[in-house]
Amino acid sequence: MSLADIHPILDVIHNLDVGIIIMDSERRIELWNGFMANHSRIEAEQALGVSIYQLFPELDPKWFEQKVKQCTIIQNQAFVTWEQRSYVLRLHNDRPITGQSDFMYQNVTFLPLINHKGEVDRIGLIIYDATALASARLSLANQAHP
Amino acid sequence: MADQELILDEDSRDLYQELLNVAMGRAADMLARLLNTFIELPIPKVNLIARSELDMALASAAGKKNVSAVCQGFMGDAISGEALLLLTDADINDLITLGGIGDQDSRNELELLMDTANILIGACLKGFSEQLDIHLTQSQPEVLGHHQPIERLLNPQTSWTQALAIEIRYRLENRAANIELLLLFTSGSLEIINNKAQYLLE
Image (cartoon, rainbow over all chains, first blue to last red; front, side):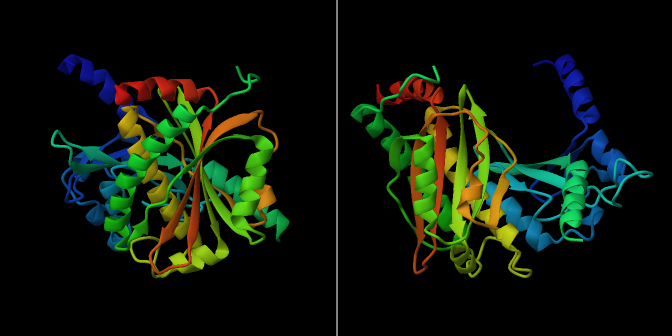
């Protein structure tokens, strides 16, 4: 694949309506797409090279590292749903005016990224906005048990 | 295709069994490293099942106790299916004492359930897909029944009639927990798996 071919791919990644992050083994940001910049209000230039724990001080390292370890050892994706934890990274909601919540509910996939030696040396995060689903489910539950 | 009655001959059964044995061997090693506990290597049971049989298998697996289940779809290279992990409430209580999974501080049961599913389903599918040299995409896992009677676990709306079921029963050293993992493959997947596996045998 030539350099010219990579440009449209990067363009798509930056315009995806899904958060994409790549971190090195020290959890420093290597890729921070447009969705992440817009919803965290941290621009890519400020995020690149910075530890995820520095960008999100309320992120519990013990919890996060356990998820990373799971997907590193098994070399398979690990999943976190909004039902078990409303969000992994606190991000702003898509609908600041008519939305039902202050933050974005998330489904998050932890992706082990394997280098040419067959070792996991990077972790990818894919962040899906689950706010619409969560709001609908929670309001149904509230109607059933007022 | 869907209406045609499938038959599982001895050779195919042995083939699936062997594929799963190797997958489980790899999975057990990863699990032991992650959980710091010894996992008894279960022998997977391979069967073709009809829908009604799945209902019965689920019911017998859980006895009369309340059960939680996580299901996760997977597909790739024209192979598709679902993984179903079943735990009784007693198993969950037992797992809470285990290190390496869940949220030890809050003892969040849902977190524990999801972690167990990530690990057991992930390790097994990884081993399986590596041998066949296929790449499987996994869907977001879904919690089907949390403290619900097992009858509610199956949605009667779907149209399948027959599936290949691989049943794996995990036991952890010194613990009563008995966790059941069911891998269900659609009938259309079997021919593809057979073709892919031929390369392994040659």
